[in-house]
Each structure stands twice: as C-alpha cells, then as structure tokens.
Image 1 (cartoon, rainbow, N blue to C red):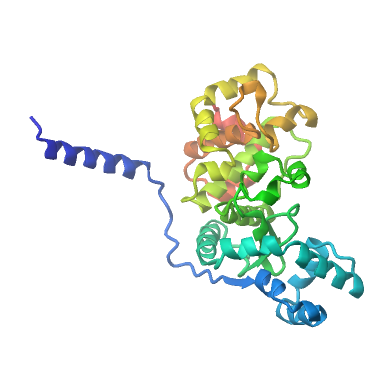
Image 2: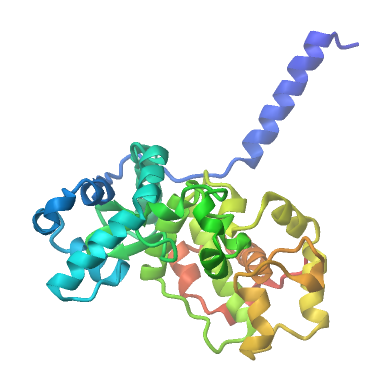
Length: 338
C-alpha cells in the first residue's frame, strides 16, 4: 500500500511524463542570429517641440528617412503639401495626446515583445531560410481606425494604439465600435503584437490564395497559415493564434465532428459564392448555425485540423512543401474524418 508521500511522488512522475509527451518537438534555433533594433518613433514624434513642428519633422526625416513618408502619407493620410502636413501633424498630436500617454504607460519599453518577435523570426528563418527578414521594429501611434501592424520597407511597424487592452475607453466610442466591433477589439491586447508581426511576415512570404476558390480550399489555405504560425510561435496560446476565446476554442475541439458534419450536410465544401461562404471563413461575431458560442471564421479551425492530419500522415514534409501543395491535394490525401 502506497504512503501519501509515495503516491504524491508517483502522481508527479505521471504528470511530468504526460507533459513531456505533450510537449512540442522544437528545432534547435540557438545558432541563428537575429539582431532586431527597436526604434521608438512614437516617442520621437510626440516629443517634438509644438512651437517648432517643422524643425521637428526635419529631425524625424533624418532619423527615419523612409518611414517618415509611410507615417505621414499612408498612416496619417496627410495631404502631401507642406502646409497641410504641418496642420495635420499638429491636429493629430493634439487629438491623440491622451492615447500617446496611455501608450507610454503601457509600453515603457518594448524589449519583451522585441525578444518574442526575434524568437519567432528565428523559427521562420529556420523553416524558410531564403526569406529576407527585417531587422528593425518601429513603434508608432497612429489613428485608432488604422492597423496595428504592417510590414514596411523600414521594418515591422507596430501601431501601439491598437494594443492598449480591450477595455481602453477609446475603443468603445461609437465611431471606432462601428469599425472594430467588440469581437475584434477584444484582440486589442499586447499579447497579439507578436502574432500580428509574424502574420505580416507570412503574408509577405505567402500571399493569401482564397479569392474565387471553394470553401474547402479556403479553409485549408487558412489552416496552412495557422500551422506555420504555430510552428513559428510554439509558446503562443492557440486561442491567440486562432483569435478565438479560450471557451470558443474548447468548444471547437469538443465539437469538431459536429462542425465537420455541418459543412457536409449543408453541401458547403465546394460552395464558391462569396456571400454563402463568408461567414465561415471571414472574421465575425460568431456562427449562429452552430450555436451561440461558436466563433466566427470557424472554417479556419477545420482547415487547421485537416492540415494537421495531412502533416501527420506525411511527417517528412517541410513547411515549404506544405505551402506549395495545392489545397485540393491536401484535402484528398488527408482523408479527414473527425
């Protein structure tokens, strides 16, 4: 008969054994150098002398000779005339002073996120060594209705105004709520910075191929992207990678068979009409046909499971080979039956 101590030790050993079995087998990336420089454009921009904005912009031009143009004309959408630019800059700085204050409080430094992005880049380089990764991260504060991350010729640009936490009051004004409803602004959390940065790299390396194709092809294409992101961000939660809540992800796992049956029974797999398939492959508040708790873009989950099945069946396939394999072939060879 086991004593309490012996039982405790036995249970600990079992737990560790299970943990080891469940642990992902990761490649060694320790030898890969990935220098990343963080440039706090947001601080330089908002610390300009308001009386001498023109001189401040000249200084920014010298420090950020390429990004300053992206920022002024693409992010701020300033009209490319000197007087108009000055007026737009002054107005934006005054309007967004509170947002910038929140950014500086939330992100006194960016080192943690830069280190995580660098690790993701190392994995990406390991799997796709021919791709030239950026060596700069440029943080900025842009309009709330803009994007939170973009790949520019200057490097990865991170709009920190998009990562202030889902409860940040400005996200819930009528105007911003119409652009980014609650199901979208729920992801305006700092932990999405790394995912969005890697997603931009992946989109540049492997542009989306979904337009005009059947739903099953679009699901598998989304599944490919999730599989690659999972490989490059092994320590990021699946709920973050999918964009689902933890409860939604658990529901998808628990009801995987029912989700697949829904697509089969409603003859949706080979549907190409955009209005018919958009709810299952685009972001949205949910999938009512599958219950009130089902997430939007639920096809992404199914596509991921099909890709996992295919990769398990062909373990010698590289991620480059996965991306190069047509979705139709993956579907036929995976023989997915949850």
